[in-house]
Every structure is written in structure tokens, then in C-alpha cells.
Length: 329
Ligand SMILES: NC(=O)c1ccc[n+]([C@@H]2O[C@H](COP(=O)([O-])OP(=O)(O)OC[C@H]3O[C@@H](n4cnc5c(N)ncnc54)[C@H](O)[C@@H]3O)[C@@H](O)[C@H]2O)c1
Image (cartoon, rainbow, N blue to C red):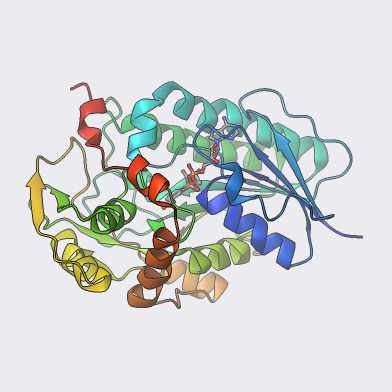
């Protein structure tokens, strides 16, 4: 019998790529989304397939699914600072109430559940690179706390269901991931730089550009998540690309890649913006025999080609917004 998987956040960036992966692997996929930050066009190519079903639903409300269910992947949540600073209460609700609903559904269906956690649980880390046993350095009441704490609660309640109810659970701590279907205006550095380059604007760096980031291409991230789901490990696992770069050097790379002549301009760093983020992926390597395969040059080119294929209307609708204005200090 074909196994059934429910993917929440299906119309989002990662959710839609996961839907593709599970369809390709021969599963019956039920996608669920309320479109708060997602877009129907990300799953338009799946809607007519016999083994894909879409349910428009807010996961913070009670969830009813007919028949059996084998796996749940909970990816619904605003994920970029620009989103969760604009919709803080929904962000807290989807991580708490939404996760509770999905754990309840997993228990009722006897399904295995994987939840999407994040490197943000490490906050502004004091340990580099971050291993899974680092507890983090999070400002609970800072503007980013709504996302970080929702995700930390999500991990806690998932472990409680695992320990108390014996539920089969998996927790992936996702580090910055990029690729086609990201939104140009989501405030993250890759779409922001690429959108600015395509519109002929200067590239904006927040702070002095010496902060570092590491970026994982979406196909690598999805492979890691898939392997984790089918492992027998219930504790959090980092999945990301450990290759670090400063934002300043990254801006230069984008200018070179896009063949444009833009300058770089500097603005004030938002509150609680981490200075460094780098996954230690030793556990994923050992446990899942997984490591990223796609180099930054190849991944960035694929992503840039995607953004280039967007209409001029979409490109200009997405003019870079200064998301610090959403922060009430
Ligand atoms: N993209 C990354 O680099 C990254 C990094 C760390 C963690 N994550 C996690 O991965 C998941 C997906 O992130 P993404 O980058 O694809 O974001 P995204 O915004 O593209 O997708 C999230 C999707 O969830 C949907 N959603 C939000 N609240 C909902 C609700 N209450 N009910 C139903 N649907 C809802 C949105 O409409 C959207 O389609 C999130 O849980 C995020 O925290 C992503």
C-alpha cells in the first residue's frame, strides 16, 4: 500500500520542495497550508497529480484527516525575520498550538512526526560551530524571541510526546537554506542581494559585514531531512552547510555572479542579529551518512536563474524593505 505523508507549510519554500521529494519517492502527499507566507504557485505543478492532495487550513485550528497517515512533516511557520516580526503572535501560535495539534494527530494516527526546528534555537551563540548539545543564548523578550522561543517550545513538547506517549518523533535543526521558490521580499540576505542586483540597486549590508553565515542548497537540505525521517534517532540533528562566509565577501560574490556593477552600502545592524552561525554536522554525517553536495557557486547560479525568470512586476513588487522598522525596541 502507498504510504501517506502530511506536509504542513506545503506552499512555502521548504514545504513545496519536500512535497516534490515525497511525490518522487512514490508517497501519497497531503499538503496543508493557510498561505500566510506561502504561495499557491509553489505547488501549482502538483495540484492535478493523483497522489497529491491539498487542504487549505490553519494548523493552529483542530486538524482532521480522513483515513490512515504514516508520516507528518511539520514545516508550517513564518521563517524569515521580516515575516515573524510582522506576525509575531501567529508565529508563536504555529510553533506552540500548531505543533500540539500535529502531535495529537500523530498520536491518533500512530504516525511518525518530524518537526522543523532551526539554528535560531542557539540564539546568538557563544559556541562555534554549534553542536546539538549546545543549549543556546536566546533573548526571550527580544524581537526575535517570538520565533526562537516558539521553536524551543516546539522541541520541548515534541520530546514530551516522545517520552510520555512513546510517539516516534524526529527534530531537524535547519540552518540557512536557499534555492528556487524563496521569496524575493522575505528579508533574507540571498533574495535581498539578488533582487537588488536585478533591479540595479546597491546591495545593503546591515552592520559592518563581518558577521558570517553559511548557506545550504535546498536539495541538500531536503535529502538530509528525508534521511533523518527514516533514521531511528529522536533527538535534534543539525542539517546545514558548514562552509562559512562573511556577508561582505558574500556581497562581492553576488556582484561577480550577477555581472553587475553595484556598490555595497551599510546600515545599522538589527537587534539580536547573530554574528556567526555555523552548523557542526558531525552527528548528521555519522548518523545519516549525509553531508551537503552542492557548492555555493552552483547553488547560487541556480537560485539567480530562478529569480531572473520572475516577471518584472514580481521583481519590482519586491523592492528591498528595511525590516528594522518592524522592531519596536
Ligand atoms: N528556510 C530556512 O532557511 C529555514 C531555516 C530554519 C528553519 N526553517 C523552518 O522550515 C519551515 C519552513 O520554512 P520556509 O523557509 O519554507 O518558510 P515559508 O514561509 O516559505 O513557508 C512556511 C509555510 O507555512 C505556512 N504557514 C504558516 N503558518 C501557518 C499556519 N498556521 N497554518 C498553515 N500553514 C501555515 C505559510 O503559508 C508558508 O507556506 C519553518 O518551520 C521554518 O521555521 C527554515
